[in-house]
Image 1: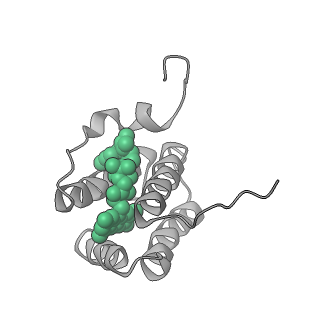
Image 2 (image 1 turned 90 degrees about the vertical axis):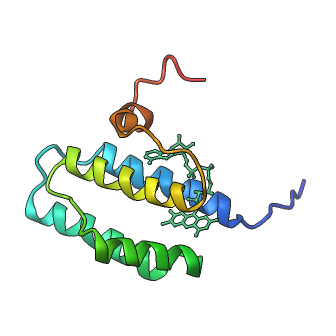
Length: 114
Ligand code: FAD
């Protein structure tokens, strides 16, 4: 039967985008080569041009200008995105996330997860 699905809200797009971003950094190489670093940087820049919410896009492009992306290692990229997400959490009055937990939040094992 036909099921009507609704277009995603800004909140859903946000949550899904964070899943993609944090997962990309969680699985990013420990020692990325120059090409991988360039692709990570380009991904963030493209997102800041194309993100489908103008206010969010502005947050992102301002953040990138103020805080040049750290893509030189898995660790640096994870911390960079965690801090970027925290700056948006702060703006939205959401709790700050403990960045030491970022890897276990976004990369397996799954056995103790709800
Ligand atoms: P989310 O913030 O979506 O987070 C999802 C999960 O990530 C959390 O449940 C938590 O487990 C984990 N998490 C939380 N913080 C961190 C962190 N610092 N590091 C790692 N993991 C973390 N919404 C607006 O209403 N206005 C805006 O201007 C706006 N700007 C945005 C800009 C960008 C670039 C993006 C990607 C999203 C933006 N959003 C904005 C959406 C907003 O950030 C949330 O995604 C949305 O409000 C849903 O929130 P949530 O409570 O489900 O958790």
